[in-house]
Image 1 (cartoon, rainbow, N blue to C red):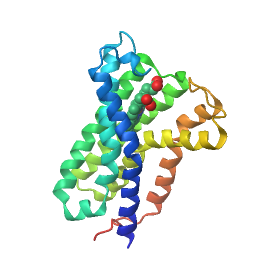
Image 2: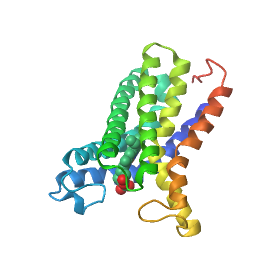
Image 3: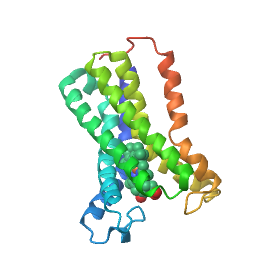
Length: 220
Ligand code: HEM
């Protein structure tokens, strides 16, 4: 019963992130094949080839990571097809590293639209994503499955964080019309938002992980 509920939640999550996955992948492809990517989006900069390449890889890898992470956690995949779970896990690890470092290189070279405050929190987000990906694989390889589960949970929260970021804006704009937000993402809402899209969700995950008894990984 519990597995059925978890599976339903993860499938609903995967379906919900799909619009953002398509947007991110499409922007990456458009940027790659354009002679003038800075006309497509403000994230591409004039004469900043390394930052542009970093963000191109970032958006493509991030798209697959956002969709792949919830699917990877499906109990049926974990329990019935462990080889698929393992192979897909290594692919997700690479995607997380590319997404994280692509974003971090971009921040280092170009900063973010929202200035140092946004750059700081986005860099924190990227660093945590890389750290969680490394630990998820490390504990899987040492067959410490309790710790693997805990790090994988944190990784999934962060993997869908970019989608949560956009969803907070969708909900906030539909309720308030965009109060406390501006185009350069320096409004009060924007400033709170660069922390709020991942930190509270990580804390909620942490709360449940700490209440979990060891070896409480559900089997079919
Ligand atoms: C997890 C999956 C992620 C996806 C799918 C994703 C996708 C995107 C997309 C589509 C953009 C273009 C901006 C837009 O049009 O909205 C973007 C920008 C950006 N992303 Fe990510 N991202 C992800 C994770 C991260 C992480 C972990 C970091 C931290 C290193 C990060 C840092 C950035 C930065 C700095 C920008 C440019 C912000 C600006 O100045 O406008 N992203 N990302």
